[in-house]
Image (cartoon, rainbow, N blue to C red; front, side, top):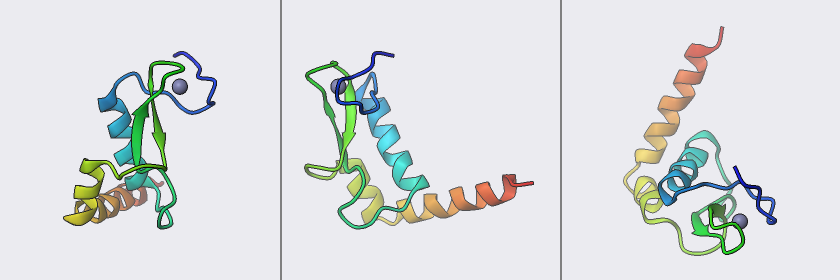
Length: 85
Ligand SMILES: [Zn+2]
C-alpha cells in the first residue's frame, strides 16, 4: 500500500474507508466531536483517509441514531470477553 505524505492510514476504496470508520466507532468510544466522523478522497495519494472534520458520514449518523451502534458495541464487547482466555 502506498504511503501518503499526510501520514494517515490509506484506504483504497470508499467502501473500505467507510467500513474502517464504522469499525473505529464500534471498537472505540470517542468523546463528543472527537474521533473520525467521515472519510475523504485524498488529492495527494488518490486513496481515502478518515477525518474528524466535516459532516458526519450518513451511515455512521444512522447507526448512532437508530441505536445500532450501541448494540454493535455491546456485541463486540461480549465477543472480546468471551474470546479472552
Ligand atoms: Zn493521502
